[in-house]
Length: 178
Image (cartoon, rainbow, N blue to C red; front, side, top):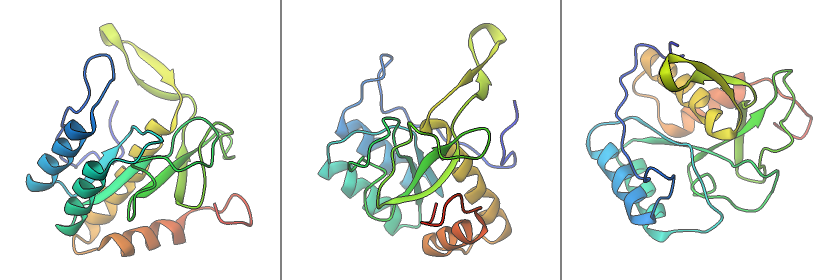
């Protein structure tokens, strides 16, 4: 499988253990690590309903040195605040279905920026196999890839300009915005 922004370099930071549990200080440390190592886009395909000041501060630091932070909105069909997708300045990405509709399990709310494909996403699996997966954790990378392509074209773009370009070029699925 080839990525959408195949000329991009990827730097991975592990903030979660093998069971998928992550602590706020580990997440913040990973965000800061990525930021100080020159990453332009930080994709956060995880979330929780509890705010963390240390994660919020790490995101604010990353943004202050030019990082664009993209986060999945969650998969419970809720409008409650969800973090890190609801922190200030984070591009919050919900999910759409294969036929272009809003995915009913996608979280939404006042801070949702965009939606991207979330259902039946083909990915690699164990032993060289492939499988279909679903969730907004797979929507956020589509937006991160689009941002990478925009930055390939103009590396001087700021986060507000990037978000404006993404929203202006997005297909509107309902008259209320997204």
